[in-house]
Length: 233
Image (cartoon, rainbow, N blue to C red; front, side, top):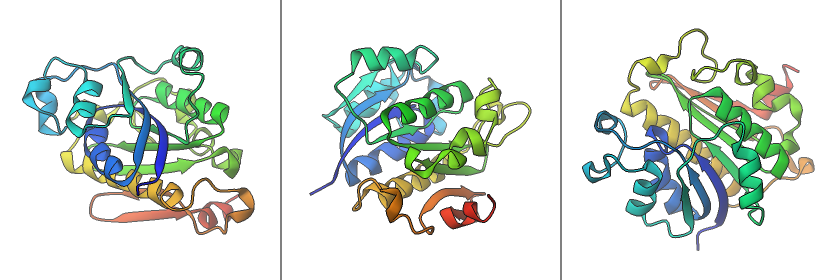
């Protein structure tokens, strides 16, 4: 029997199209998939959709094709007003995790704030042209490991650049499909490590070896654990 996972998934583009099928196979997904984008023909070279979805909302295409009956599509963008609207309209939903699969910092900042409000886990999965990253945070881990502390540009830069990217956003170049796939795989594995058979952690249970981040240049993957960050603080 698959473990139940209550999730708010923000972003239904490249990373999500690779991630969602595997996540749905691993968990009994409940919650919301949020994205205001409609599928365009040029998306198909690096995002897994059907030609029939062109012109339709991406959230509807992903939910339909993967038959995720307990996941609802919200065809809207995550911005400064989303947090309040969600709390008002979905006040009875308590997420285990917020999965953030978008490349713009303002949306990521809202997701960080929502993780604090709901006291739930947060995944940010991102990629540049040929590199991929996935990171995990939960308020139980403390402020020093919060994404906005470790990567201040999430809070200060209002562009659509990926994590740890300076200057112009690299998304101006089409992302490689393999980068989307890698980021999705790393995020799925992090979610399974933290929620697959353990449930949410209590701070007293943390040993220091738990993985909180993966970074990859496609040919090589770096693993970052709680011990790694503790030695730097």
